[in-house]
Length: 383
Image (cartoon, rainbow, N blue to C red; front, side, top):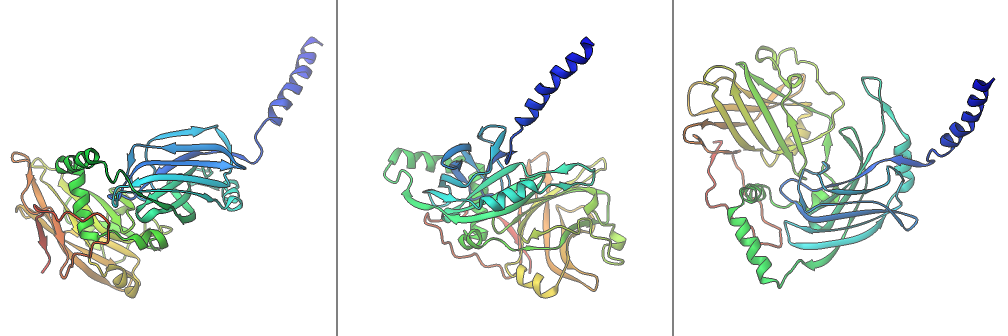
């Protein structure tokens, strides 16, 4: 009898715990983002519901890739209301301008997304667990909701131009100039901007996505890695087995698309690494700038795959490869490229790092701060 009483006494406590579960509150964190090579300094975001702050995030400086999250300070309860407004501020690395704004959020749309859970291939339910705010040049802001590696855009808006950050601070300007002279990261970003400009409109309108996939093929058993960048500063990584296509049937038979549901942006540049498993372990790498009419070519040809191919290592200080657009009826050459062999003793590439397509024209620079033309840039250009 005493045992039964204990159970009866426990039930009210259990019901009390269940009744305390949050209603219309979800487990989510705040994230921040910026385009690769067009970073944001001091980004800060704060989310509100009915005028009350519920979460926020900040960092010293970021450029993880558009839509990708970066580390930084985040705050808020575990279970939070869906925000109805947002406040942002940051300093744009590309133009040196400080931006700030408060803006309403589409709360009903976000609430619907939080309630919408999907089941993955392992039978697990996936829910949206992050609200990410992106800071881009020109005061352009994008907000996404993310679950797993996928994101859904919920709103885009413009922040207010608050003026040039520390415009009259001579010591700050001197610090920036000295930093840029010695920073390897700045040199790489400067070359990227030199090749691709500063496409303000792509952050205002959004970079178009296409249903296609990527592949890699080689005659030899070599390991590879491809990082490719889209116009808006998104970053994609390609280095896993499902993307490898056997040389003998890279076109014939047309293997099934490994990710048929992918919606991807088109690349403007690729960083490639290719090296052997044998005793010599010859290592090749380089950056390939894609043709500037790539989007028009892709849309006109109705392609559904891009393939990067490298035939074999012929023992020279570089290897040559070809990029193709492919569909079930045809395979069309996009461009040829070179990767330089890395010399371990000299610690350098034995061929220029960059490949440019034929007919490439350096775009007009639209940024407020004059672009520093690279003085030591070496490249091989397709004829």
